[in-house]
View 1 (cartoon, rainbow over the protein chains, first blue to last red):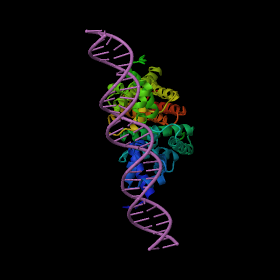
View 2 (view 1 turned 120 degrees about the horizontal axis):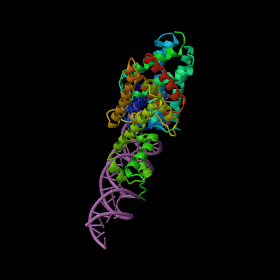
View 3 (view 1 turned 30 degrees about the vertical axis):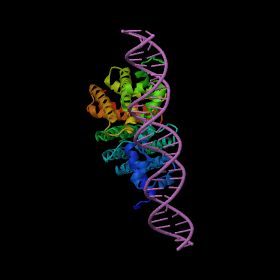
View 4 (view 1 turned 180 degrees about the vertical axis):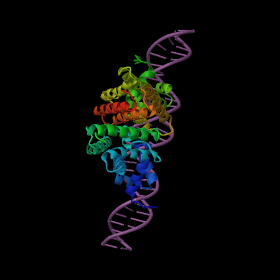
Length: 191
Length: 191
DNA sequence: TTTGCGATAGACAGACCTGTCTGTTAGTTT
DNA sequence: AAACTAACAGACAGGTCTGTCTATCGCAAA
């Protein structure tokens, strides 16, 4: 065999990403990951000694991807931080239109992990980073209360994302964007 | 034994409610429900032939409870539908302060159920009902676009709820409420 | 007293889970 | 050629899961 266009580790991680996102980490057995990535069991356990290590690597991959999409969408909206805060929601719309969209990987994973676990902590950390990034944008946008605005906007993001586990109705990100626009306008004095 | 202050079915359902909400249905074995509700396995399987039947009953119980809290919070905010739309968010704050708060039972459960399943369908139905109820309130509040406003407000609700799986920070429902107020005011012409 | 019924306790089957271990194959270096 | 390395295939142990089945207990009616 050895169809190593990709090295084993990446093949494993890509497969895990796809399966974990579709069914949740707990819903996918290690054997399935092995079978679908065309890798030996020993190889998987060499790169990821426990299944949780694979889950954590999966979350890091999601973090990079989602954060990247947020930044790209914000930057695409122009130079004005206020426009960037609103443009951010385009990432939600794009995600929603993507095949196999299934909501927020972090929230979905956190829902099935115990409170003290590493997986849980990683999720909390991710949300904290997103919140801080939005707050920074809000500060540069001149919001009177940047932290409040950031919390409101991430609420809309999380709501839109988590609703995605149910259906991929495009009306959801659309409503999120209009709400975001209204909140940004209200919070940043001086159009 | 026979400590039937409650009949067996309710004892089972109450126990399942507590355990399912804390760990997710997939994270709780039938044996644990049996042990903690003090019931024989045959009795459980008489009332709920498949585990999924128990999960569905759990979701119905959650639906009643959450919908009731929303209605109560809305009614407590006064007679004006605009105030009721905002008061609704007090249910979020109360939920967040409750011991063992763990986010939205529906989203958490949907995250670990397959797309075509009965459990998934029940969840979608629940969100649809809440959306319709909020839209009706928005209509009576005189919103120019009641469906849009309803979608925006339920986004905030869902966002606040789903964030609860990570932490129970009271700043979250607080921000949701102020955002809700801003959106309601903007959408309903004529204070 | 005897018969019947609902609930109990718990063994069991069969599937699936994680993680370990043995042995083999292929490619590279010495 | 010989040794080393990395990946392969897959058996295996020990545990958990759902759902079924047997056998027992307590109580009420006949």
